[in-house]
Image (cartoon, helix red, strand yellow):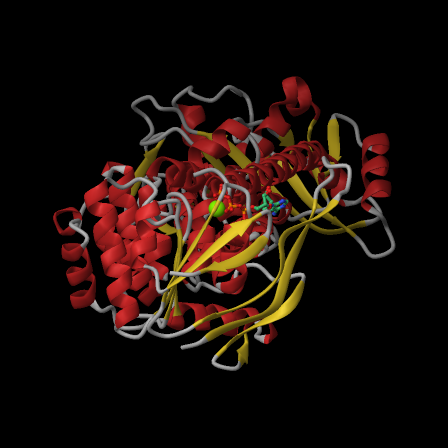
Length: 225
Length: 398
Ligand SMILES: Nc1ncnc2c1ncn2[C@@H]1O[C@H](COP(=O)(O)OP(=O)(O)OP(=O)(O)O)[C@@H](O)[C@H]1O
Ligand SMILES: [Mg+2]
């Protein structure tokens, strides 16, 4: 699936600043194509998460349009967009995102439960093994380390095999070995036809990138890889 | 989705238990309160019917120390007599419609009698106050030494009871009235006169020198058409000496007043608990949702629509409140049904539980009301959850 952003930008109202209207992401156009791993880097506060939220249908841009295979995301009703995200997008948000009353396996299978779909246990098991959390399948999130929770969130985003993946600093709490494994997983996912966008501060990520974007004060620019 | 709601509730078992207890308290109070109020109302209606006459006339001495009133209203035992001539004088007054004499006697717990009870004799030919009650459970004619027992007396039809050496047979038992009738034994005037005679012979009657054939304890009177009970009472009290006429409406006024007071208090209690319950419930739901803002945002990311998040919150609330309300209602019934006698004694007011159908109706009503209240309390939280700004929450604290 191809995701196309056309002249999108996002303003925020901030009372604390002298100019209370400020642009977190300046007008930009971009394409997430199948088979490509796009890496987005940039300093803290440069607008990476804001951009990712817009692309994943979680934050309406102030202007511009985002289309997935020609379908305008923000023209859909909330119900349609939710189901669309459920089926076609895997989002790994920044920070910890466990549902605390569910164990690790249930957390990973959560995307299947909202619409009464049959859970893909096999895929969940494979991902847990791949991400080295299979032994924690029955553990509760409160018993997990930050890195383990992070890997759980990655498995949850991939379990439905969505065409689009958005990862916001997916390796934030991980050691080098696990970081490398996560990037290998994302790279492989792209190679199998997924359109993957990942935000990261890891310099090593550059070597996995098919497309490398950098952000500075809301402006996106493409680097040569 | 439902299992997520259940797991969320189980995952926070303490909070869930507190919320359930609140819902239980709500339905308990609503059900218990309404049942008590209804029972008091029914008791009063029953008491009015039990008195069954506009006016009661008793000898003046029976009014000392509230003897007569306590007998009627509190169910204490007692007896007193006036001479037939006085009764006849009353009966001849203008404005007297239906009239029927009654004959009182109390049995003692000593060896002479099987049980200590109030005995009331009525004249089957003229009676219009007791017979309607008896007819409900007994179709036959009461023979000599046949008695009808109030529902609270621990005797059965066919039992033989002895009063002052006279053996009587229980011919019927009355249904519950919630009044002093429940501890009274009824018989024909002839039977009671025989018992009075026997008690006199044994020297066990407070009145040594009465003639049972010429003694009457009380006259039950309905005012004739065109005369008000008030006028009749005044007329009798002015013109007939050594008797006292009561308007039955006035006698139960005190009771209906204090009953109104109790009902109002219970009403206030219900309202207070209800308002407080809704406030606390909505606070608790709001807190529980705020605490899980991030989780709800995560569910959005995974593909839950705004509507389904609101649905999840409502489902959690409905589950908790339904379970809690059912438990509360069950507890209410468990307290009220077996202990209604105790409640009656404590309140010292006529108290008659509604029928099974009504109780079931009130129970369903209380449960539904408290579940709806819970849902209403959760509605605000559900609405807030459906409006959360996913992007903002997920950007925040890690
Ligand atoms: N809802 C909002 N209201 C006001 N300002 C916002 C909002 N969301 C983001 N911003 C501002 O927009 C800018 C970009 O934020 P964003 O979260 O996209 O940065 P980021 O590049 O993801 O940073 P980090 O690497 O620290 O995660 C920041 O200055 C932030 O304060
Ligand atoms: Mg960010």
